[in-house]
Length: 491
Image 1 (cartoon, rainbow, N blue to C red):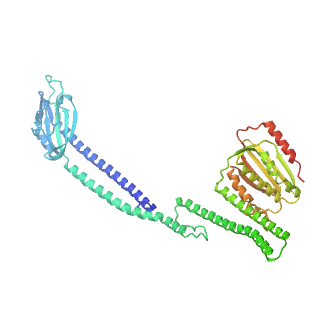
Image 2 (image 1 turned 90 degrees about the horizontal axis):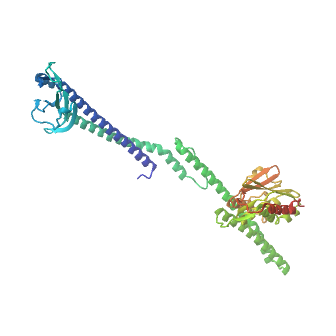
């Protein structure tokens, strides 16, 4: 019942409204009852004081002016009135005890109140003790105060009836207000959530084959605008990912078609003509080369997906950055010599690492391979590393001539290559930097590409191993020895 936002909003506001009406009604009723009681108390107090003024002491006896008290009570709301002397004898009013008050005139001035019943009538009773005045100022009179008491009662029936009527009015107003409020709040809830219904319909109408941002919704509440904007951003991201996946499928189809076409043509040629053993062996070698290249492509795809899915469970190992660079460079130094590259190294400090070493070496191999392969003939290649407090940085820079600011934005896309004509299909699939990006994240590093003029840089950053257990002198000497082997420009 309360699963929808409309029902929750309507029910919540209805409960709040009813609570406010109930609290207001109870508070008003209590104030009304207190006010009526206060008025009756004031009436009884005025009545008792007025009656006390009609009594005086003569020769140590309390005298009552009955006629004046009778006239005084004619316009009074009092139900009964008794006047008692200092011994508790009734001097005025009914002789029987109407209300059970404790009579202690010696205590002096006092007020006692009771809510009781008399002849099945609810009454409010007051016992008012007062000091009676002396009628004559005679030298022989006693100076001892003379205390008497007045017991007066008033019928509470009219007040209770008024309270009952007032209570009925409050209940009626509360019930009517709750019903009207429930209707208004339900209508308001539906009006307030109508833009959400429109938003839900627009979301339901989204076609994944033609993703377009949601059109603006009129009267959309400000609280829902962030949701609307985030949905549009999500649609744009999904659209980009779908385009990326389509491009990925197209590129991988192209990359696989080329070697498969070569394999098929080679097999058809060898099957459709008579060849000697030497030619047949050459055909087998060509087919094997194509199969190995295709296997390399598939292995790289699997490697990239495994890294992206986080299924690697490789443990971290300790190493030194300089040694890792040297070990990786040994794989490409010969190719750098073939291209007549001028290579310089600037590794001036021991940088201890702790990371998944196999993945890190794959990152270095991919970066150095790209730097060597995409550098022009007789180009320049620079490898620099430095340490800044608890962080290190490795920069691999080479000059190039094909990359532009537009193509620079796609260097991490799968199957992207600087050579858009795909002349290197079969030898380079354009997966290296995509794999590097995934591996770098898995190793806890960051990678930043930069393009300034004809200089392309890849910058790796990470944290230095906190507990450096390497000897500083021997490590520096070891780096110096490594640099001696590769410091000079490679020709």
